[in-house]
Image (cartoon, rainbow, N blue to C red; front, side, top):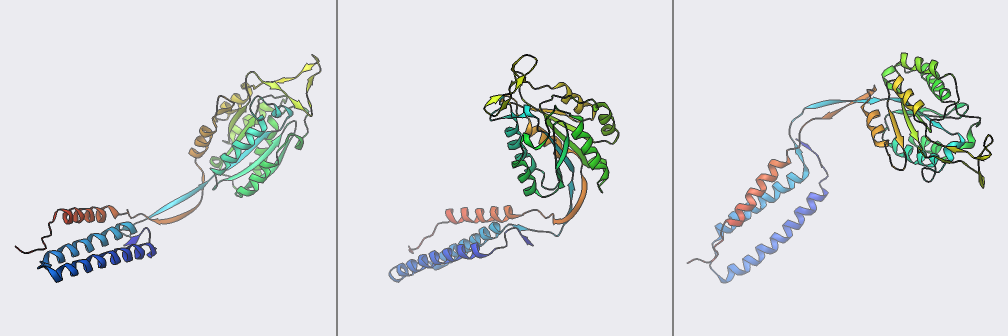
Length: 321
């Protein structure tokens, strides 16, 4: 028999309390017995019942499992690159406190859901860089997320193809070559000034690497803060306004058999993104054998309750007529 809660300290405490209280009860009965003619056999029956169902309650509390069946549990892992747009437009505050700050907050929660997966961080604007290589270390990932800001990369426009090409290169040079375990989460407001996107998408599609794009921003947009002022549009000599552009992001997801998700003050689709990634088939990274025996506490508990009810309805006549 296998016990779900083998620690006997709690059981000993409960048994001690029961024993002390029952001894007090028996002592009181002995005092009564000195003065009155008492039928002792009915008392002995009740004492036996109470000890029996109390012991059964203790057994049920310990969680007995009967049987020696075992089951092999496979642990699957995935390789996931998260590409984060750090262009100046990510400082826009159409999503409070800003697009980038909201992304950092949401990513911390996302990463916690994939503790058995390797995750890497890529940052980009006009160029792309690996901020953190693929790793299982959640603490390292969280530290890199805390330090993200738009000053980490050159800002001469946004090239969405750059992080996809870099992630593809890192996947190709990695020891793990299982295409089913590789995917990219692309986080951006959708502005794109690059011209190499078609070629990269074709290569990703050929290798079965899915891209899940996450749009950040609103259709109304916002000005872009810089210092104590805002970035100016030189062509109109007025504050530049950045808006969420979904067309490119949706196309990237569609062409790689991924999906498009969005973050705004009205739409929060991070839970859906987490669900989709969890459903992806991963590479088997290990296995462990666990006991498959079912907890049979219910039978002991049911028997104890039956005896307790019988004890309640069983009369105890102490004085002979």
